[in-house]
Image (cartoon, rainbow, N blue to C red; front, side, top):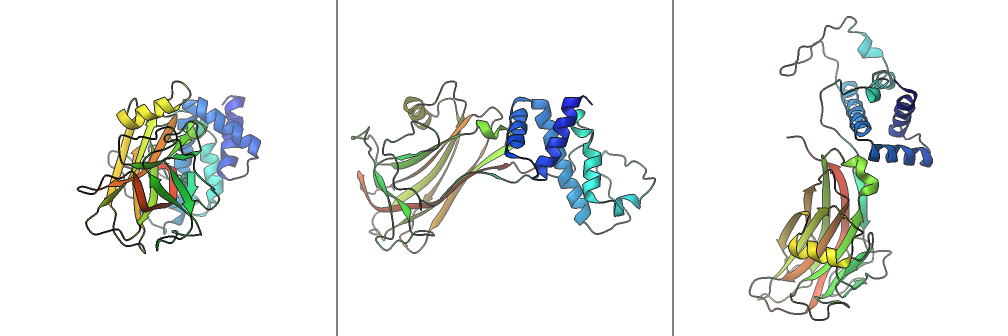
Length: 318
């Protein structure tokens, strides 16, 4: 093992144990982002941690089932695994793991803590930027809207505030071609490449919708969308409009629901998007629109969003 790999190996073990300084964590995350081989080895190490945890938690057994196509190696000292501490096992097995090709097949699904990208309840947000699609990452932009407290019989999902859709237009587009009211968030995923750079990342987006008790003859729909893409150049509003309107150079998923007329009931809606390994940005979109045979209005009387969450998880095994 070369000295650099030995240092990275030790650093990775301390990182998993939560013992790294912020500077060390930043160094390791940068190394994982730029070194595909190191990233794969690091994920294998985490997978081994999960496997060992499962073994330690399982009740003692005198026999182990053999996986299909795998011949178990003879165990010369079966008592050793029963008493040796898990931490020592992990350290010993990991000593060569980050410096060699993958030795072990995946024996359990890779379990990683989700990377929380957005947790928004609108409690500390005074207002969104009413320009439609985003012009920069990590800022809420929307059509005309407001952040409000309880109104029209609708209480926030939790806390004292929630987002309220007001119109289908915005400062830059006063005469929209549709009657859809939207809120967006552009998220830079490049700092989180280690969580999905192996092509197994899963973007999970969700929010809670609610409405006032609208007339029975009317219908309204809610939708959640997510777009993943490479930027090529810094994202701007023109490129964002092209992605939303034409799905240009992106992968996309959308989920819809029919909004009910019960202001006491929040409806949760979410979508999952498999993240390509080369993703640089994601754009999330929450919107409401009139349903079939409903009046096509520019304004929305009482439609709300709360408890927005965006995270990176791991794709479940097939």
